[in-house]
Amino acid sequence: MLPFNKITQRNLLIALAGLVVLLLLTRPEKAPELRKASALRITSAAVQIHDLVPYETVSGRLEPMRKAMLHFELSGQVQERRVEPGQVVEADALLLALVAGDFQDALDSAEARLQLESSNIERDRELLKLAQRNRKLQEAEVTRLETLGKDSLISRSRLDEARIKLLQLESEVAELNNSVATEAARLALLQAERNRAARDLSRTRLPAPFAGIVNAVEVQVGDYVTPNDAVLELIDTSRLDLYVEVRGELAQALAPGQQVNVQVNGHPQEGKIVALQTDPDPVTFTHALRVRLPGGGARSGMVARVQLPLRPLEQVIAVPVTAVLQDEGHSYVFRVIDAVLARTEVITGRRVNDLQVVHSGLEPDEVIVVRDVAALSDGQQVQVPDADL
Image (cartoon, rainbow, N blue to C red; front, side, top):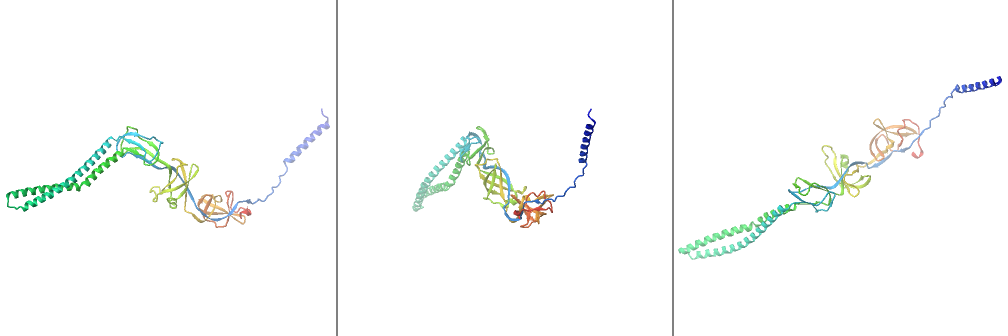
């Protein structure tokens, strides 16, 4: 057993420790000290007047500058297929051909009739000369017999025969004159027939109307085709066209020949407006716009974005976009008046890059907060750096 004085000493120490803990737990809290809130440091700038050129970006897909669905102009059976999809061809290169035997025969027949008629015309010219000489001789004979007198029965008989022969010669001359006079018309008819046969023969061959790439071939050798059948698609991708629909406001600010910026697959290119629909579509009330650009850096089917300029905005108030607070459909800015914020409603217009046009609510040279406006409040004290004034 421990001595009595040691037990008493230990209990005393425990009691003192408990008393200290109790005093710590029950001590009164200090009254909070109010600290003066420091003014918020802001970034501000003076309102300025700007001359701006707004842009609007629209997108569409690129198409070949030229694209043709080719047809034969007459019916027939395919005899030759000279090309395949993806093949590059020059202008006038032969693509497809039909069996041409019947058309060649028609041309040969027309040429033969034309040659025969030309020979007949030469013959009639010579016969006319002979007939005219014979008529003159017969006229002289009739005149001679008339001078011999009319009393002799033989003379009257010979005179009648001479007159009949003269009439026959005059009829022959008239007929030959008519043949020679109409020779040009007869030759023209036969020449037209010959030319038509030659065109039909040439139509059995389908040439490339322009240099390009064969995109599709729809027929095989042996197929029978008609003029209604599309047999081949040819495209020209040396340059590409971007087709878009634009609003009337954009259309009024654009003109054919104008240069515009086009983004294709993230790469900028320069395009040129080659067509602009003047009268809008009656359903969509939009204007069709075609922009042409080089085909080297792009391919047909790619999505492209074209930046189209609107009418310039001259001498307008514009503030940084970050200075405008949107709240329940209204727009506000914070003016700085003697280091105090004044929340001011403004009427905004078009956004141009990082600037927001303000139509009313601000005056030039007023100081406004230009960033971090969402956390600000009306009447708040702020610190304005000297550099912002």
